[in-house]
Image (tube, rainbow, N blue to C red; front, side, top):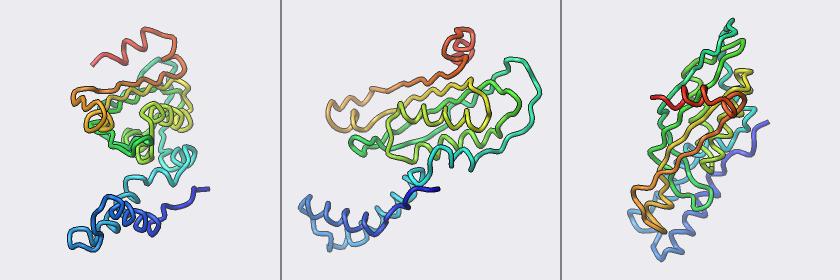
Length: 192
């Protein structure tokens, strides 16, 4: 069962309050439609908050039979994404996600891998959790325990505020199954 849908009316009300708290006039021409625009944007960029990992797995479970005992690896690199940090609601941007898995009895349609990553990033998130959520969903859908997720991203909570270090990037790796212990698989994964 899906979680409670995003409440656009509540968002509009609170955005209006934020504008007032910032000392601006929500009735001025440039801000008249801002609460509604923000509410519609939040409905879009936080769509993933409406679904559990299990529900996302069901949405994108488009697999094909695969009969192989080999260690063939499927890697989809540089999936472009963005998300919002749950600590400051700040943008995580220029995100590149790489997802890899070793197929067992089925393979997942390639576009579904990107769709899973996209839906997971449409939540208030931590970069570390994005990797874990994608890996968990990939395991559910493919039936393979052997999943890896690599993420590179800039965080505006570091680049635009606080330390204001515009060159800092954050890298995370989520390794499951054989990827955790086998250096040969890790080496294949990290080759570009």
